[in-house]
Length: 392
Image (cartoon, rainbow, N blue to C red; front, side, top):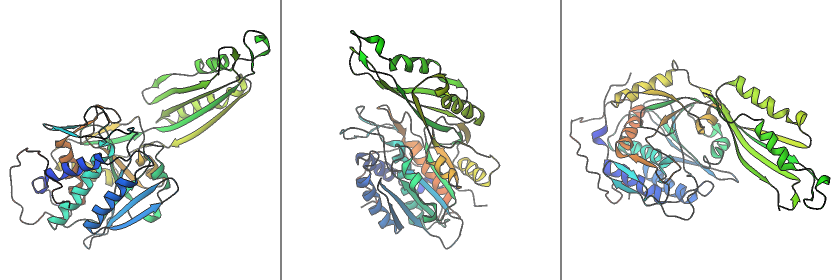
């Protein structure tokens, strides 16, 4: 077992904040991550990483490898480079005491750029302090916010690690995502027949009325503690004087319970037995999972969180992440909370303490020995931003 040590005082607090500020200022909405990816590639080159660029028609994944002569126990550190759409607005991060916010007119981009900043600071700290470490890889994906696309297209044969650590869940650092649901999307096309609504409505067949009957036959909202169902979009009709001949209904459902998933799938696929002229398409977006707490990798993560002075806690997620896709591919992926609060909103924020604690977790899980010349030092919480300290 590795010695129990804390590396907090040797980190560059200003540097990790500054890296985060620079990151969020570079726009990278889904499928338009290239500018940010190039920025990261240049930083990885300075770290001496072996870089693998995996291109596809949809986008580019980035793999960076850091070998070690001290161990063959590889670990992957995964994060996504994209953010949700932010229009053409420039993100302006604001430091207010211990909190980092956007200006209030945009998202912040802590999802997932706070984690990427932690990864880079951990790698830099390990190098600067000559810390013996296990071999590790950065697995930086594109298009996570659009159906987890980058992770789907990432070829596991391109990287060595079979254990993958992510920090892509909201909440204070220290949480471990115990379970994530299976997610399905559905699309129902309801056909009717056009007619003039004032002259010969009896010749028409109102698709909107049929769609309303279908929708009201569904469950809605939270069906059980682990299952949700939502109709999120309806399109149909063209004018008030025309009997509508087509309506499209789109929605989703999620559950960690296979029986409930199967029941909803059956209900949707049997709609054509109850209603005429409909077509139902179902897509499984990702498969759910439940962690085994006795798994050795999970146990290791629990111990590392404790070493940071935090109390690890397991929590269920109602959403998906690249971890779902990695686990489908047979990899042992574990997702942690990153400190981000209210992602995808203009209220998105993260505490500086979480940026630091998250970095500390990464350093401790990578480290094999205590750093040389360890000495205690009191860290003053002076978070003024220096111009790219240590990141020329």
